Image (tube, rainbow, N blue to C red; front, top):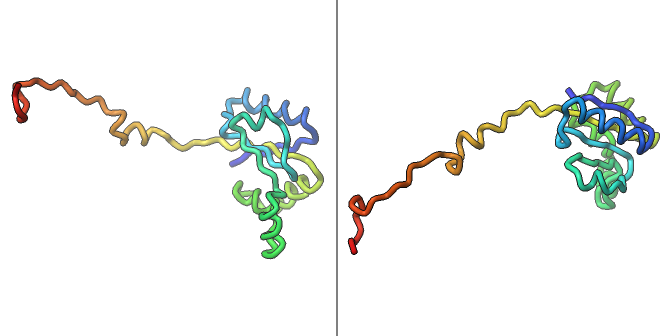
Length: 135
């Protein structure tokens, strides 16, 4: 389950991000959701996901035509109750930011177990065993 912290300004945002990192969250497990795009170079150069609910011009136009809600579309991935969804949607509309910490409990060992690049293979080859032409 995702832990969502509501912050009011950039100073508080950095404090919460540092707190989550000290609690053991990786940058890849953190996301910042805001109404408009954040212009914070140090976060853009990190692995923290930055999401703006306003989206691009084409996103806004498609939402206008379909009636889709940008805040709800972004928050829907976190499996929130209807009450939590509405509260956080109002937080975003009130120009607050959300820091989402979502632990990744999936195992990435399958790559090492199933990828031939990680296998130890004995590649010693002797000329006497070769079936090709001998020189």
